[in-house]
Amino acid sequence: MGIGDQYPKLLAALCVWREARGEGIDAKRGVYWTLANRAAAQPSPWPNDLAAVVLQPHKFSSFGQGDPNSLKFPAVSDQSWSDCCAVVDAPGIDPTDGAVYYESFPTDQLNEMRAQDPWFGADKMTVQIGAIRFYRR
Image 1: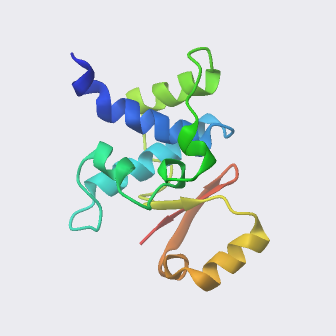
Image 2 (image 1 turned 30 degrees about the horizontal axis):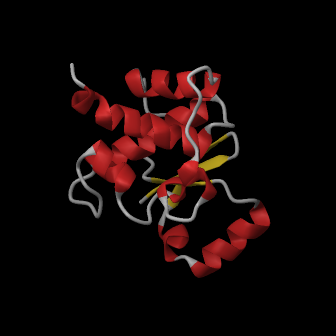
């Protein structure tokens, strides 16, 4: 299997690492499933390909221009990176109940974001895992 075959998995693992590296394995799994749920949702506003979901403009802050996380890459010895790769290789059962969004804002900032961003009001929180809250439409 060539690197091209592994590209979507590597990109997904990098997204999970950038978005949830300080969280436990279950939260990392939730972030992965959010990517997978977007790719599987049809019809939807998201691409039906895992790599394209990760790279879709303005969807994951850690891949956005100017975001400090967009310049971070894991060290090979980073245990969190190993965990992210393991989650992508064997994601198990979706712990988010079909989530297609997540956020981890502090409560005061979350309330402000809900007032400014319509997706917060349109979605149902399915579960909170660690500091990350997961939502579905």
